[in-house]
Length: 331
Image (cartoon, rainbow, N blue to C red; front, side):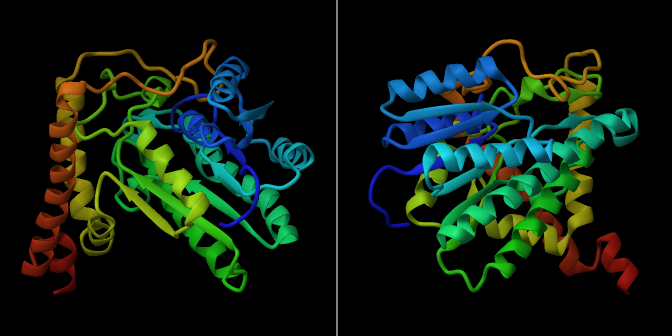
């Protein structure tokens, strides 16, 4: 998007992880930011880092699962920023464990945070964009929007739903060439979200091979401000995710479920927890989750990409040979 002056950017989920990394990345370019999250301590920490990086940072404590609070955030953003060039909807939470083993209230919270809150934000932001006749909306989705995630069924429901929501909005705005709906699909990202997740798997959570740095996602979002595109895939080729979802969704999910069962059986034991689903962290969480070994990052990234690709290719071959349950039912 071409415009004079500093970018005016709203970021939700800005107190840690990808949202925080993106705030700092925009600040390094001198952007004027409105940062929102539930966590006042974390917000203040990231806002200070943004100011040190040459940005201007406003903050507003906001629970984005409250539609009225989101509407208030949009009003404040318009008042303080004047215009909104890009709105990054970055809130996301998770529940790990077999679906029936986690309380239904936890699953409901995942849907509220990962799907409904993004819908509330779009409902508040789009009138601003329409009045300006321009704007970029960025949805944080994940590979979970294409590849079903056993042991995170509510997360999968929210991300599949969010992908459909984005596609519908793009259709509605197809006659508005200067308003863009952009989706980000990273693989696993090393953020504090792992420590914040609810966990009913009985096993200690850890990052799988191939986790990428939050700064990599942040750089992708910053690029969208200048060159918006519908879909951005990070860590795994987009065609592989699309092929897995289209060709062998059940086979891919079954393979991933086997991996999760093996992990849950062998990992260090841990107690059940609802994590930070309902209450924000009491201390600043920062950007990085600290779960990657720098010496192994390149090897791990290759291994992670190869693992996903292997699931996809295996499933596709099974489909072509007629060996999957879906193919056998059709025969």
